[in-house]
Length: 75
Image 1: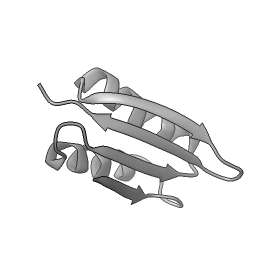
Image 2: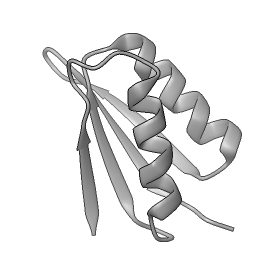
Image 3: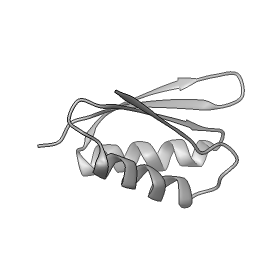
Image 4: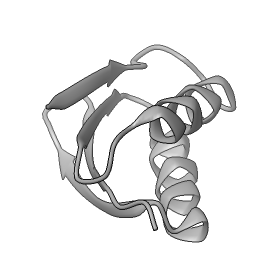
């Protein structure tokens, strides 16, 4: 099941904190889609996923926002 977290209009660090909470509760293999219009948040959320090792992230640049697709991988 996919979960969508729309944090457009929000500035860091709040979106990163919200994404961390969602990832903590997500099940293995679950897809989490994060929508943001803040380029700084894209970098910080990607770093969170990579450093924490909780999954793989793909970034799609839409017309006026970014969509981060995270596939959760819990050990």
